[in-house]
Length: 365
Image (cartoon, rainbow, N blue to C red; front, side, top):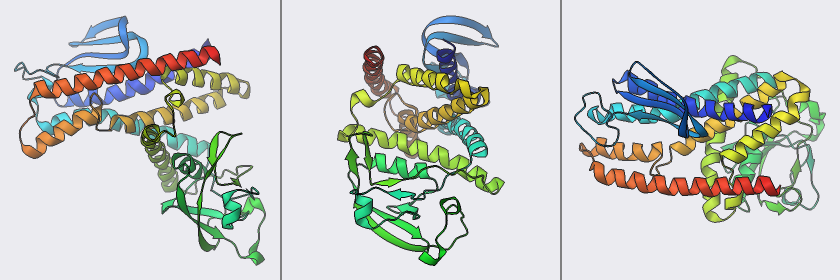
């Protein structure tokens, strides 16, 4: 029970931070905030302070920052629609922006504690594309399709997000006379000879993942050499996870990811709770770091997905506001409201489907 409680609190905290972005920018722009809530459904706790109702609701599936005149203008000078288009853009964009801030903080903490792990090949698996392409143990993967690989997890993420696609891999290789033990492959000041190979990943039934046939074990984490590098690596975590969340939508529509593979709040909470149970014997420091890592994933993903220009999401509202800024005239509120309402219905239907699949998988599994 304690494991699930920790998962729910983490999930709620990430959502709360998103809504705080909307809240703070609304207040900064003089917009009246009617209600700030965490969760959906019936209120569990509620109170009014300085004209704003603060609520904790039953279902930890979202949250809201309800502003006066948010959808229909009534002439309220402190209403959302009475503010300039750029003020409204800042309020809507603040939610995802706050998610990126939180994810960045979490990313810096993780890298500061754990360090980073360069994408060095420790073994090439026989019979896989990497062997046929000529990659060898000791090669440092520098880039894939022109995208720089800073860490080994960059490579893993890229392979899973581009299944069965032909990709160009640039690697660095030490001359044979400079052959080093695996522990020394991570020295960044070494001079490598570079080469390029082209290959496609293949699906591995045992691991249920796409592979090119390289191994990286054991990982060899080492500390960031400077504060600047620590901050860059922390931000890199945010960018990598945000991009992977958006790329996952592409895989969903191309059929590489099925609806049953998409996890919703129930599966996420269950997964976090299971993780907490597994690492608790290692001590509360490891539990806390594991929760921070999950918070990094959730916050970066939530920020990125919310910026997609889809109705009912922050990105959809930003799209309408940017059109208004360009044309100098607001789009008819009734028409925009209909679009967002339709998007909300689709989103709710998708959430119900995902929640049903999550509960079914938990019962079956």
